[in-house]
Image (cartoon, rainbow, N blue to C red; front, side, top):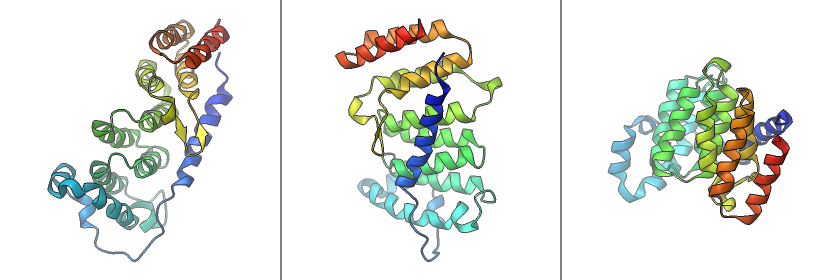
Length: 225
C-alpha cells in the first residue's frame, strides 16, 4: 500500500508552488472589460501579439475575483473563470496564471469542473506540459469525492505525464519526477486495485527508454509485491 504521506507531501509542495509565482500586486483599478472578451476571437484578433496581451491581462486580473472583493470566499467564481479563460487562451504556456486560477477555483470555490476546464483549454495548445498534467492529477485526486472518483482517469493522465522528459518534471526548485508513479499507485489504491497498479507500472517499464527510470519503476514494483 502506498504511503499516503507521500501524497500529502506532494499536495503540500504543489500548493506552496503558488507562492513562488504570486499574483502581481494590486494597482489602480482600471476598466477590465477586455478580460471578458471572447477568448478564441480575441486570440485570432491579436495574432502574433497574443502572449504580450496575456501579460497585460495578468495585471488586469487584479480587478476581478478575490483581490477586488478582498475576500476569497465572496468572489464570483464565474467572473474569475471567464477572466482566466481569456488569459489561458491568450497564453496557454503561462503556467503561473493557470496554476493560480485552477487551484483557487478547485480549493476555495469547490468548482473542480471550472478548474479542469481551464487546464484543458491550455492543453489544447500545450499538449506536452508536465506541469499541466501534474496540476490536473493533483486537483482531481484532492477534490473529487469518493462516489465520482475514476482511477482510470488518473491512470491515463499519469501514464502520459510519466513518459514526458524528466527535464520537465520540476515544480519551482523541487524535482518531482518520481511522484507521478506514486500518485498513480495512490489512485489505484483508493479503489483497492493493487494488481492494476502493478500492471500500470509494468506498462511504464515497457514504454520508458530511460535506464534510470526503469530501475526506479522496478523498485516500485518490488514494493508492491
